[in-house]
Image 1 (cartoon, rainbow, N blue to C red):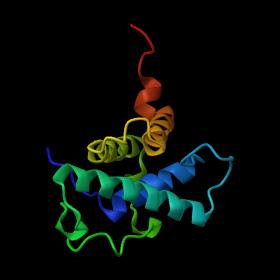
Image 2: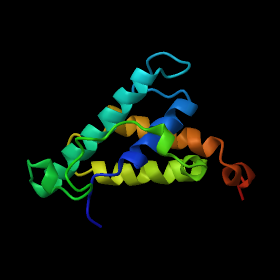
Image 3: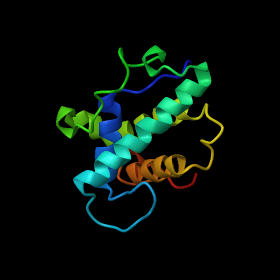
Image 4: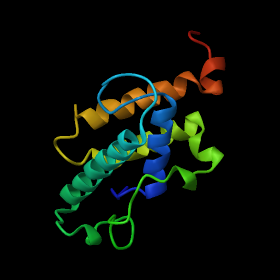
Length: 139
């Protein structure tokens, strides 16, 4: 598969799920994520996605990268665009997996704050996933 810049809705769903689990990019504090923190998280995840795809295709002009037509200049955290199914635990896990795939082209990805954040969010999402809760711990 090819790497691409994920949609605004994709990133908004990840950020909203993180807020639901009180997860910040870097373990600072606990409790409700303020709107400003949500926007910063959105921007950080978008930045690493763009950086990775640009690196993968050796392209400096964002408008030439696979993903949204015209680039990401209008991208914003927009939780109001999300449907209920966008926020299901398994969907959150899959959205995180996809974003990881799009971001791992850049050599600075492994061990990055964003990579660790997505791992923590996937763990949190699975902990509340009904299918995970009913699966056997050992067989």
